[in-house]
Amino acid sequence: MERRDIPIDQFHYDPAQLREHWLVLCAGDFEAGAFNTMTISWGSYGQIWNKMFFQVFVRPTRYTFEFMEKYGTFTLNAFEPKYKPALSIIGSKSGRNGNKIAEAGLTPMVSRVVAAPCFKEASLVIECRKMYWQDLEHAHFLDPSIEGNYPKKDYHRMYFGEIVHVSRI
Image 1 (tube, rainbow, N blue to C red):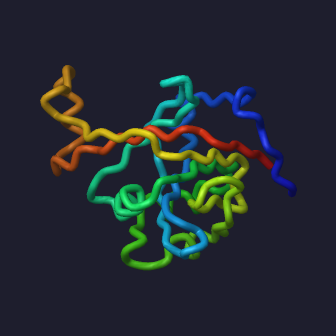
Image 2 (tube, rainbow, N blue to C red):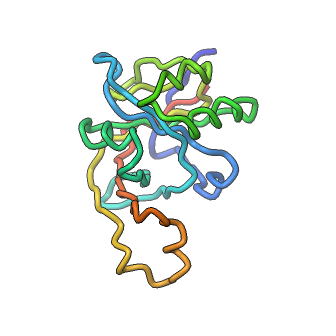
């Protein structure tokens, strides 16, 4: 199937979907063969600084964190429900220990605008350029129950990615 571009001003995403329909975050550089991926189920989407953005959270203990730090772009990839087993592999295994992308049966490919790869099987690809990051600070949690998400004290780093391209199958 041919991918079709979606004008950014006509794109809408409901981040409440993330509870059930994970996105696959991919950071790195496709041409250099240096990238890693992980599933995400937390995030937000909107407009800030007159730019459309997607906000993602990555723990510093994740292998993908190294690629988020080193490279300036990332992609978010949505898949049809039949890919849930593949996404379970992507979300539960580390790229440090093997080729989880191949094990999941996914095909990385060049993105339209950014250096980070997207996936051939993705029904939706959101290409982002990093524009801001900040570490979550546990002292700022107003709801004490939030701390329960961090038994290892590995607080997420938050990244704002300007949406620079969107395509859909």
